[in-house]
Length: 155
Image (cartoon, rainbow, N blue to C red; front, side, top):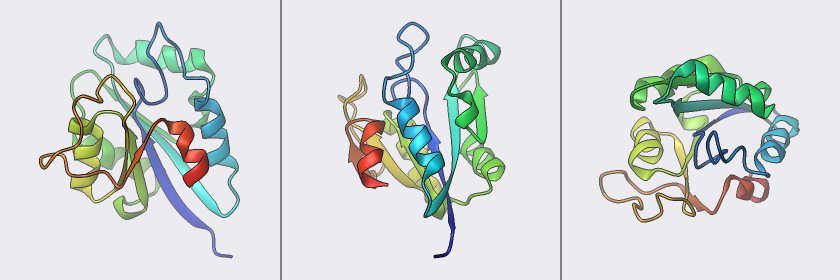
């Protein structure tokens, strides 16, 4: 069996974590570990996040969670998510858009950017951004999921 390398780029808050005060979702580490240990596909794992309060603080948050070591690439900025950050993440992971999945809860950010770049996109519909579903401007996601825990069933 040929080993296929794919990438998955996660959003942080609303996708893997409830934020600094809410902590990591209970299933997030289980999902990241599953993706790391999967035999037939070698997943490279990335994170693209906005940290309005500061990049160093977001890194500290990630270190506290203990899951920082699952990521092959971490891109954090303090302003806005743009395609260039996703391209940089893919470059660092050694993947390309057609073999990369972007997972996020914000259709106007993660899903729009992933679709624009030609990635597969998985939109988390059970989040604070559920009232802002994908539309013509963002494009439809490849899959709609309830949480990243659903990745255990579909990947």
